[in-house]
Length: 90
Image (cartoon, rainbow, N blue to C red):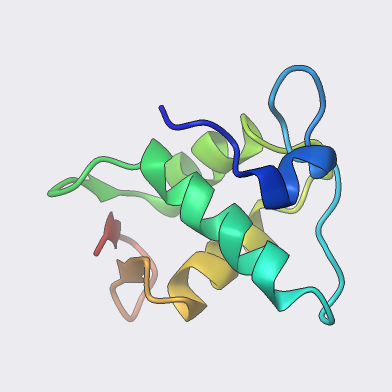
């Protein structure tokens, strides 16, 4: 796994879990977090929504995997079926 980028290191605890989602004004930090999190997903593999949430929940403490999932999709790093049954890394 790659190291946490310097730009966002202060947002992580000693266990390398994200503790705070940056405000809308801090888009660069939001993008850096999502770019960092995408490494936890394997290419050419499909995940259920529950699996995606489980992976994301291992790497943050604020309990909002749905926010992170939406951001990953919005930034074009994950894709999903229309019925949200399957997710995959782009």
